[in-house]
Length: 345
Image 1 (cartoon, rainbow, N blue to C red):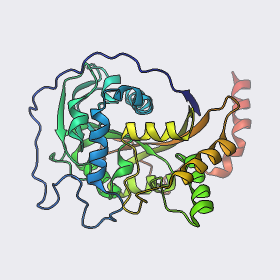
Image 2: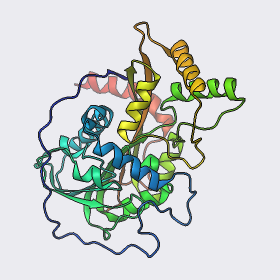
Image 3: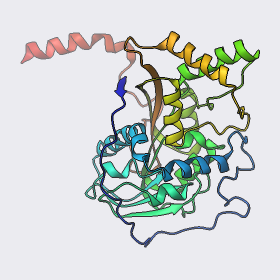
């Protein structure tokens, strides 16, 4: 688990301009499904996607937005590390829910030829970070990607898919736009994210108001990710978890940073207002239950990383059932066989 303590914002150069889109097929999205923030007809409408777009646009407009990028930059760099672990280059790549380009800034043009970045928030695309890869910005919803089938060699996504109402559909869309033998590498928040904040608010609200409502959005369980990826058509799956713990001066500073990241709650069943005394009580509970010796309070971000490949005939496949030439019962004799081989040498 990585522990971070907030530092002053780092200086960055102005963002690089995008390049025109060429040789990429765009498709028309079905009528009624193309509007940003709309939900798939088959999905549960858990999140207010229009509110999420406004939150991300507001965060991207802030003059000190760089100081809130620390978490997304860290996870973006870890996604880039996973891209570098694959011994091949990717002529055409797509970032789904790119924000300000937290993955692309860590990649180089030797690995990725051209990068398409999509996001629901236009201000995030306008204020993208600098990168050396030629980029194309496309305003699009994660659930309704406007690209034709079999276009991209690589699709990545970092800390965006936990806000979609229909995660199975979003994964199906990603699988659709990938070329055969293309790879998807993604990250999203896990179920234990911000458990300290969640518990503190629940205890304080129950004590002060006689009950509580959800103030932290629901997250996907890690046990479901493999099933969802397989259902979308991916194979050779890898799912792993990690935790990043950040120390803050107090609960209110944590909530300010979540707002600056564009990660405020947007669930439809959220409570619009918390009373002042409830908030103060929650801050006191937070410090009492989880506070560090130096007076700061920790916040835990659980990250799920996932990798899935689109099928191609060249990929390794498991042998047919019954084709084994050695039984598991004979594995116990392997030490004897190895010792005999050494004696014969």
